Length: 56
Image (cartoon, rainbow, N blue to C red; front, side, top):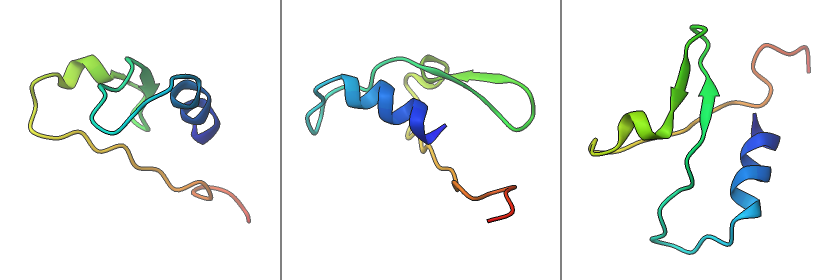
């Protein structure tokens, strides 16, 4: 996922205050979540731990 976000967000020349580009990611519950699902909400936080569920 980190590579996906780096590729997605790194491809755009974003500046502080710019709107994030739309994207969708799978949740651990099997559902797909789109950034647009949260339009108008107070805050959106995207967090992950790269070594979660790995042996290293």
